[in-house]
Length: 509
Image (cartoon, rainbow, N blue to C red; front, top):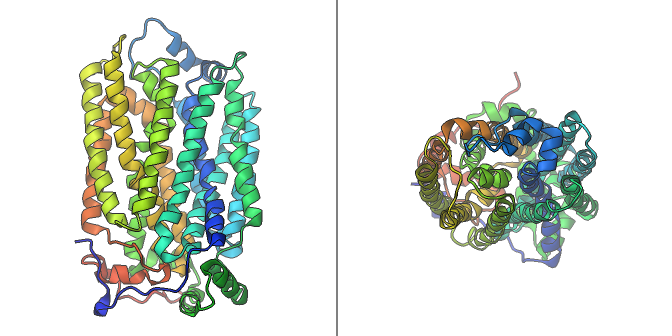
C-alpha cells in the first residue's frame, strides 16, 4: 500500500552528474556534525556509572548503590536529579532547534553548523571543570543548544549536497558519525573509569570538545549548499557550485528546479504558518512528527545513553557493564553500514519494515528474559554468565535492527521529503519532536524501570509494533527521487493524495 508510482506513467526525473571527490569530501566533513550528538549519547551513561562522579554530584544514588542491604536491581539508580543531568541537554536542544531553523534559512546551513561546534565546545569545557551540580547542568544545556543547531542543519546539508541517487547513503553518514561518536565515548569511559584519583569523569566530559573542534574547523572550509544559496538570492554562485559538485557543465535541469522551488518559497511569507495551516503539507508534517516520536519510543536511547547503568542494573559488574556497552557500540557502528549500502538499493521503506520486525522480536525476548530472571521484585544477587551473554546478544541484535533502519532513516526520511519553502521550518519540527521525546524518555526511564520493572521493555515493544504497522500502510518510498520533485510521491500515495489538491500558498490574513 505504500508503493508509489508517478502520475501519467512517467519515471521520476533524473539529473546528469557523477560522484565527484569534492562532494564526497564535503559530505563526509559535514557529516562530522553527528560526532557531537553521538559522543554525548555514549558518554552520559558511562559517566553516571562512575562512583567518583556519583559521590560528588549525586550522593544519594552513590549511597544507595553502595548499600549492601539493597538487592533490588530495578531501582538501584532511580534519581530524578541524575535523570535531569542526562535529559536537560535534550530539552535545551528542543528549543535551540526551533531557533536554528531561522538561522539556517537566513544565513545558510554552514553557519548553523559552525555555531553548533562553538557552543558545544564551550559546554564541554564547563562540564569538565564543574564543581557544583548547577555548573554541570548549565554545561549540559550549552551542549544541548549545540546539538540542536547541528541536528537541524546537518541532515539538510547532506540531503541538499548529495546527488539524488546517492542521497540515502550520504545522509546516513550522519548516523554513522553518531555511532562512531557513541563507540569512541564508550571506549573513553572504559579507560577513564580506571584512572586513580577519581577525576576520570572530567576527562570523559572534557573530551567532548574534540568532536566540537572537528565540526567547527570543518564548517570554516565547507561551502554552503546550492539550494540554500538560491534561496538567499545567490544564483550565480549556486550554479557554479552545482557544476563543481556534480562534475558536469549541464546542470540546467536541476538548477531550474531549484529556481522554481525558490520562486514558490518567495511567495511564502510565513513558513511556519504555511507548514501547520496548509493542507498539502499535512502528509510531510505527519511524518516529521511521527517518525522522530517513534524513533525515540523504540527504546534505543535507553540502551545507548543508559547502557552501563542498565547493564549494572541487570547485575553486571562495573567493568562488565562498560565492556558490554562497548560491544553494543561496535555493533551499532557496523550495522549502520548495512543501511549505507542498502538505503538507495532496497529502499527506505523495506529497511523500516525489516528493522521494526527485528526490534519487536528481540525487545520482547529481552523483556521475557529479564522478567524470568528478576521477576517483579528485582532481588537477584547472582547473575550466571550464560544469562548475561544471552541478554547482551539479544540487545546487540535489537541494536542491529535499529542501526540499519530507524536510526539512520529516522534522520534521512524527514530531511528529504519537504519542499524548499518550508524545509528549514520542517526540519526544526523534526529535531524538536526528537529532542522532546528524548528528554521525556531520558527523564523518566530510571523511574519507569523502578516502577514498571521488566514491563518497561514490553512498553517499548508495543510502540515498535505500532510504528511498523504505520510504515506498512502510510510510508511511501522515496529512494532515487530528486529532492525538489518529492511532491509527486505524496500525490501518488493511496492515502496521502487526498491532501495534495489544495494550493501551497496561503493568502496573508
